[in-house]
Image 1 (cartoon, rainbow, N blue to C red):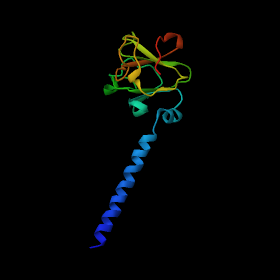
Image 2: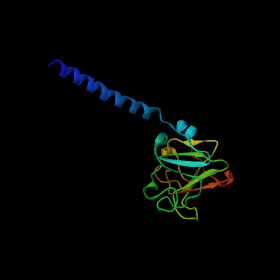
Image 3: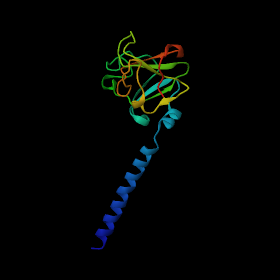
Image 4: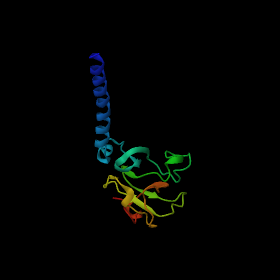
Length: 150
């Protein structure tokens, strides 16, 4: 009978061993880590703050994150809570509208800023929150941007 409690203790400790590293790994994940590991020339969008839960990456313009014609597709639209820019030459302009008219208000992420880890305090030029509201993006020069994500 003494073997059963010992076996349960070992199993319990083994279960804790698998839980602790997973939570520790999540706790250290950050935009800085993701920026270091990101491929050069791409912008990234994440479902959650601190660059957790990747939605996708793109090195080209995408005028509608809700369609299925570019890197961001379907449910990616209006879902980003953090963004990252590891572009080579340009800034990324994010919109809460769709289409090649690039309307609906915008915010930009500079290459020098690297990332915006929490979009809840960022707003489009239209006044709407950028959090869970990005529907499209394009690569632009800095002079095209009137508002910057931080």
